[in-house]
Image (cartoon, rainbow, N blue to C red; front, side, top):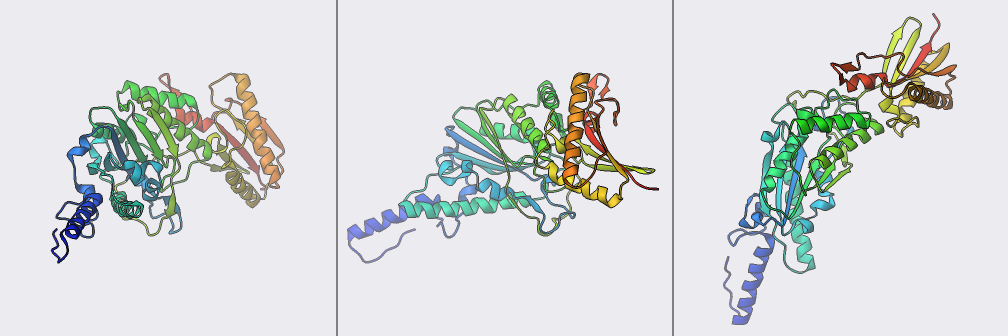
Length: 422
């Protein structure tokens, strides 16, 4: 754009140079001013994006589990993918400049990954410190709008495949070396492919190893050789019962192991920021649900049995109560008082793995830990016993020689038997 004014030749030249620098620093062409199209840079590919020295791919989970449903009240805290990603050091505009940026939402399979921002070259902003700060703020606003839009889009399928999304990001990078990074916002509750978690027990390194082996044998591990991977929000779904801290730790360990098995140079997991759910989102396609072992209650005659899954209370192979166990035990104590018990007894149980001696020790130690916790809440427990695997609740634990990890998780439990008057 040219402006003709009466001035000296020197001043005219200075004005033209300043105008050119402003347009170049904003990422706009000579026919687009920053005010008219400040976000056009997100839709414009460039030959510079083929420069392999730095590439960043951002993946946003838009599957049904990442969206609040009607059961979520307006003040229910749900993950805020946009705020989480914008707060990530890896996505600071100054760190993205000079490299290529791709952004996509995902659900379903690798084929459903939709690259809304497709290898865009993020040119360095120019000008003094104040101009650079202002121009980066404009770009940040553009990126925020784009992230919120794709996060709010309805899922295209009724499933989630996290490994498939990672494979799509690896393909997006193309050949060549250089710095490559994947930043993914997801609850990690995949229900498709080799890492399907619908039958998971969410407890124990053995099960994690089995998932990794299954994915390797199915040739579904993406090739992430040399890629840095950052996961945000693992275990933080927008619907359903939240996992306990041991269950979240198991999920974190699973995705770290799968990431490393894919050859990534670095694998990190960080929490997600949250927001109020607000109004319920429109109905979406139903999704096969990934559920965590949860507290249950079973009345039988004068005895009501409250079952506390091991993964709700304890870390793997430990008898110390986890941080999130306290709320569960508060609820259990309230329920026991509501029943007006004559007597309360606690029993610990394990699965069939490990030695009988270890099973006895662990099941008894866990029963005693729950007994002590209930006593602190004013509940008198007449006995605490450890039965190891003598009284399984779910059988069989092996089907055709293959471990059934959900059945094993069902058997790793503490039971509170509450006897009432007739």
